[in-house]
Structure formats: C-alpha cells, structure tokens
Length: 68
Image (cartoon, rainbow, N blue to C red):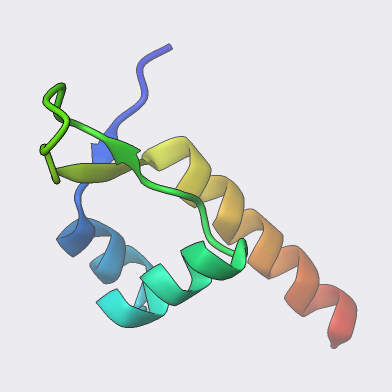
C-alpha cells in the first residue's frame, strides 16, 4: 500500500484550514501530527500522511452527523 505525503499547502487546500489553525489543532491533539521528512536533526521539512488526513475527514463527518 502506498501512502502519499502531503505538504502544508496541500493540507491547507484540502481542509480549508489556515496554517496557524492546523498547528493549533496539532498541539491540541485534534489534528494529525506531521512527520519529519528530513534525516538531519535541523531538518524542518514536514508532511502529513494522506491516509491520516482522510481519517480525520471521516471523523469530522461522523461527529457532524451525530450532532445534527
């Protein structure tokens, strides 16, 4: 199984969330954590697993349907 890695612009476009909101939700534990893409300790490139973003979407839909 191949999993795509999404960079921040793609995550923002797919979710409609801003950069700050994404990182606030990551800190709060309500959004998937990014993975580090570099192997160097100072590497700052990160991405999100497409499968985790899709699972987050499914959870949002489920929660939305239960509250409606």
